[in-house]
Image (cartoon, rainbow, N blue to C red; front, side):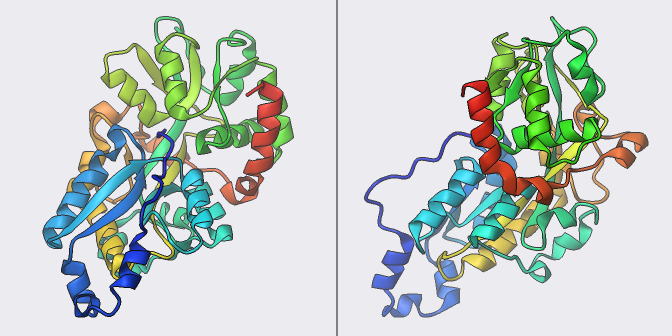
Length: 357
């Protein structure tokens, strides 16, 4: 859903700068450090979905003069690889991160668990979302996995995952590479739909091979493939479908079930090896994201994120994308990410070989 992160050469890291100034009385006090000019670097989405993050960053700056937030688009997996390669000089301070990426990050030891007592608004989060932060990240909203389609070509969209295998969509459907959480989640949902364990990636890959799909390397590129008419439909984040529809394109979306509607919470995480004082700012930023104003902004046009704070109503315009009826809310679920997220690397290799990526 975002552009690749590019690191600039010859950048002097913040840790190096701070080390060189360690003797300065200016940096001796954390309170003085917080007041100094600070730019937090955040891995976001790289598109319109960054709007609530940017607004919350401005509020953080108002509360802490001299502090600013820079949001860079990039896949979480790529950010983790860069932090690990940096060997102690993290190029990023925080990120939005889905549950599966958190599982990988924990194994790589590149994130610092948040202290939820320092995020007062976390008590207002619907309890069903909190487990998907795995006690280290703060859920802030969620994205749904459904099927986006060209309304000029698809008159009867699929309602259940199994409907995709009726034969009529062969060669017309798009599929996201499982390097993305979208692609990996769709494979797990395929297993669930056919009564297989969600970690049976070999089964899921073979089922998708039956449909001769066109491959998008990222959710954003898959969205563009639908917009350009290269494919007629594809599993997609509801946010991508909403953005395409908001642009005036004839893109429909179905909250597909069996399993589902599926949701994936997005979390705020804090990376290791960041400058002193960063942790307090990350906690305050997460708390701002859970205020009603930011939640309502995130849940409205054109993004329509699913909100996690109790009492925030789903806008009528968001109902086509976000579970809103009592029946949908009761059946909304996530996937068993810990069972298959560690298989991502092997799954991507097999996928690339099978689909000629």
